Length: 450
Image (cartoon, rainbow, N blue to C red):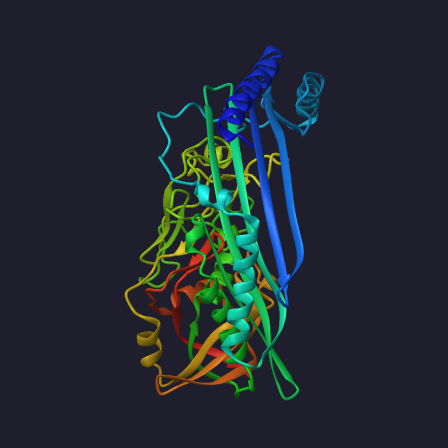
């Protein structure tokens, strides 16, 4: 695809569709996305699957008489675009009027971000296959007990986003990201344990196959021989992956639409302490090398670096244009779209706990006894409204500041706010798993159920 030519073509097309809708008395927004994805799967050094996919489409949102209508099309022929306009207007007529329905006005400018690494598209597929094979070789070479490859894959995506609305916004950007991962199984006697390694980012050269392979193998091998511990209260340390799992429950609760519907554990808590003073939680849509970075959100609002929790105090929620209008504030640039087929919801971008000053080793060294948690099971059962959770956990037992033996079959339970308030140390090892990231965090004391 020639993205420069396509961008101009799509900006013209979006403008025409917006004009068509405006001619029928509506304010309108046309959102176009076009992209191509590559996915490679390798097992036992053989290519199991190689798929490339392309998609493009236009989503049209109209507001007429305070009512919103939406329609989308993948066909860009004039009759199909006319039909899309008619359908959006017909859908608006069926909707309930709401005075907060609005589209953002033009902005003076957008952040300048470097989101496109040409190496992602110029690197030959053969070289990408070799990268995946190398991940698997490294995992197998790490330890002879690594016997099974569940999956070993590489993915990349290149896309163009164009947005035009009748309030004066005309904007576009072109981006790409890539990543690789492995899931391997270590086997000893009759026991097997799984481990994973992964890395995603905006630069092809930053994908290190040796690191991904060895990380997956190390995670699997270190859990061999795991057993339970007795029920007790002790310090608990979450590795970055487990901490990001908890952020997955916190994120939707910080979205203003959940707060406005009364479905958030943070409702009515702005200005209050919701975490320990060592905790800062940030959403940054313009973070360098963030795979969710973009100059503007799904409505054309500039993305921002939004501090949600500062030194443990809840500062604000995430907003799109609609929720901001309802609360009388401005959008934080979090109008997220899954694709051209949906209207903008409130969603996170690059969402993370800010790094602290301690190394993970220092955090562990201070613990007489405790659990270093490397995996939790059942996180989806956590309640985003009350914040209560009860999850299965596995990891490594800490004795006199050292990681000693593997532990599994235990449970940890509590409340998200109490958990955040109980954090007494934050690591300097902020690690992203996709668009969510966290460092190592330590909770002073929790009940570990054996």
